[in-house]
Image (cartoon, rainbow, N blue to C red):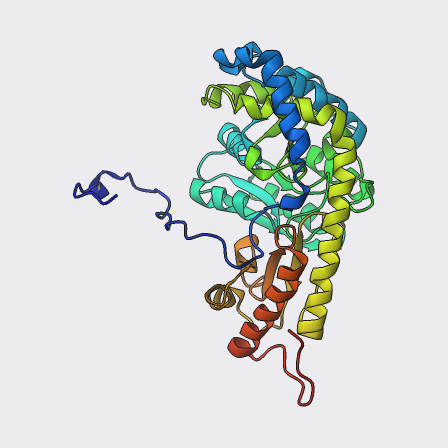
Length: 410
């Protein structure tokens, strides 16, 4: 609908840029945190929906289902058990807040702790949604380089010391330690111990984003940093988006009451979607522990297809470390490839990618890198999409170089 009324003079300063109209997904979509549609446990979710609505559907007449502002009690009870079993976290239902996906968790933590001009510490490559929020808030982000084991503690130690010498106390250290986004690394327990020690020494809380932690190929993960902190200086967030379905928009926060009570006062939406919470609680209790291994097995086969396709189409021009879980592959192309430009050219050819600079505190370091989500496309779409991407890359940047007598197979 077009309006002749001019709203432009009424917009306050500092609004984000306007959104473009939605035009649909690309033919070959390697973007976003979408999951494998074939692995959504549809029959069991239908059964759970029918069961819980028949049993207690009339409670939808009351805000929060009369379970209070922290969320549906059976879902919090499930999470208490799950977090203890999987992540070593000992908590009670009172330590948990159900939120509308981990993005709302990010907003609540930021609203409770940050003011314009504050400083936070991030992994150099990190989640775009977190970085964008801080840019809008006017917060200074200090990036710490990563290696195969995640955030480097030697650089973190020197950074904390330098900031302290300048009278700056960071508001938090944000980390995705278990299946890091975008690199797919897992921080080992020894490094987590050092992170907890440094954070305590400098009086800085840790903000632990564990949204991908269920999707570990081996099924084994180190304890959550929250579980390892002796002084309660950790805020932990998680989500059902990657383990069940992203469109359900259900996440959670585990935090000490001192900060939880502040976030509750900021959560003014009258409660996150109740039906989703009811369905998840009813589904997860009997099915979660068998569903996740089946999901990760299917995702692992798609990763194998993606890595094979990249090796076939790009050869040594595409470098990557095999991730230890998750739904993303972080790829390095030759230095002359500008993935922000590649993104536009690839999209015109029907392939969508996430250019590296959008996922980094050091845009120069990530200018020739890109993130590919392998969960959503089919195996055939992965192979075809990578072949198209390679052809675009060859035309735009001359890589991968085509051998004089060997045609790349599409």
